[in-house]
Image (cartoon, rainbow, N blue to C red):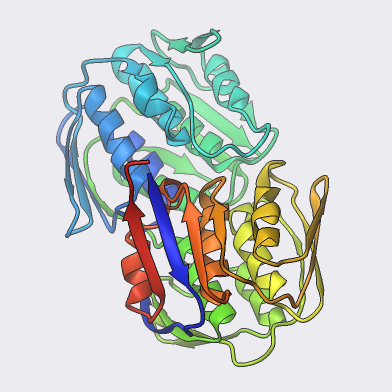
Amino acid sequence: MVRYRVRGGNALRGTAFIQGAKNAVLPMIGAALLAAKGRTVLRNVPIIEDVRRAVELAESVGAYVELHESERTLVIDASRLTSAVLPAEIARRFRGSVLFTPALLHRLGEAIVEGVGGCNLGSRNLDFHYLGYKRLGAVVDEGETVIHVKASGLTGATLYLDTPSHTGTENLIMAASLAKGTTVIENAALEPEVLDVIDLLTKMGARIRGGGTGFITVEGVDELHAVEHTVMPDRLDAGVFAMASAITGGDLNLVGTGLDLGVVRYKLEQMGVEFAPQGAVLSVRCERTLRPINIITDTYPGFATDLQSPIMTVAALADGTSYIHERIFDGRFALAGELNKMGANVEVDGNRAVVRGRTPLTGTQVTAHDLRSGIALVLAGLAAEGETVIESGYLIDRGHAHLAARMRALGADITREISEH
């Protein structure tokens, strides 16, 4: 059992090093299994629990994987895949397991997914991944606890995504890369992480056009080869550290972000947070009372649903009433009840929340319901009076590497504890 213990009141100051992108590296590990010979090297890998699970999953199907933590580097040799089964004990612990199915289909002719897990975010499902495989010629047998996908060979087709899911887009691009003929994916996701995965696949020999346009064309090739690639920085990690600076009245230099936080930066600027690029470093500071904000989450380039929970915490300390409309995941408001335990005033009505600030937060025992609510409670603890204890801290470890150590280096009073109970 992992818990985080946070004592508030310290302004964060110094240099924060932003980790590699979780949402890019997981599909890249799946993509590395498409190479039938050689070793793929991924650099700037975030040392997070989801990466550890992905490594276990790759090893369980026969790949040889070395995770060099101090160098943040993965070496993957998938020349021998021996099992088409994605075992439930690993697969149910993170949703990225579905990203291994294209490689298993192409290399072994089938993929058996025993469990699909991750954060509980309501009614999202993976139907469109499997419908896409069917359109490419696979046979999909969905049981209550097992999904069996079989294909003697995939053939290009025209695919339309009902929602521009980044995981769905990446999965279908990987499946199409080794399919015969041409595949067109309409309403494809636009996220920078998707473009980074396309960049890796292109280095491997895939023929992909239209990344970032919503209309992607993939010309199938006979084989993909192992390459070296550096994972882009994590926009969500950067957003969280920017909010940590804002919520504590701190002054941080973010290294590794590029400068593109997109709409998150603009919304924080509306709240009174100051951003100043200094070459490759982005400084973030906040010396004034935060202003309230209106947020509507949307697919990229809209406001990221993954940062909705953290900005709810920031809004609780703003001087006035903020309004949040969650349009992506209907299970995203579990944070509200936990924040209210700390003294916040958050009312939820369906997929809308009203946050009435400025309410002083007081430390207490709270529970992370998913990765993003967990990191939002860490932010709340940084700004609260007294001590906040966050249970189910494992969920935070799924997405943020060495969080306590990185925040302590900036002056936060935060510890990560492991207990037997």
